[in-house]
Image 1 (cartoon, rainbow, N blue to C red):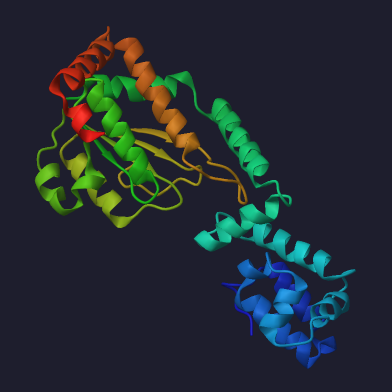
Image 2 (image 1 turned 90 degrees about the vertical axis):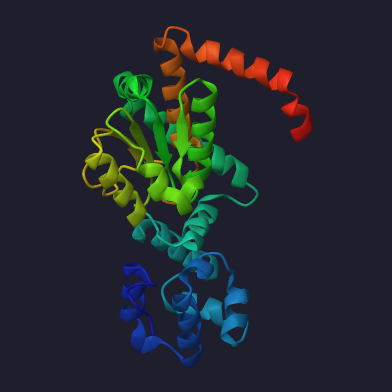
Length: 295
């Protein structure tokens, strides 16, 4: 009925210990629960009973047969199992469910704020000023910066590219050139820098791009999660940081904050290059008339 891939070890053990006491209705309920543990962590007893096609009170009876005072306590057990047993959950639905079960009723915003604050605070402990300066120095000395991130990090890559170009540092967002990667990457030299963003797992193309940068003798920088996304060969400069524990928001705030710090630190060491470039860009945008036509 249940499989190791979909059911937490704690729930499997609980079912096994009580298998001889289960009724036909219990088995139907457990089949529904184990087929979709993520939904089981959210649904109440009546909803689960309805999906199993049994009496509304059956979920309560199952919970008590398994040793709980009622279905809410059983659901709390399922929620805790989901959060504790999944590590960095691969399923987007499971990640969302884990966040929901950590939030009190009506407290989603508060829960997100708490998790973001906690994630940012650990950045203070794990990332040093020296880490930020090494990234900034690489950009300052580069002929051009190639930035790459996929999924949610495509938006961060686009933002970093925008800011660096405005600051006077030629930058290419590789994610916006996926159909012309050979043409773009063929221009990479030892004078360039590749800046990678990769959390949760690395996509095959990331390592292919890294290999090309290695062959071109370009410097590679990477911001990844703590589990050490496999990048081969390893980057020349690497910041590994958590976006939050399972059940926390794991948004772009952490890597975006680090990227912002790098770009700001760059402005502090480039003898006014960034400031002058931003002023020139502002003047050009005003004089060109493009801002009026694009709004």
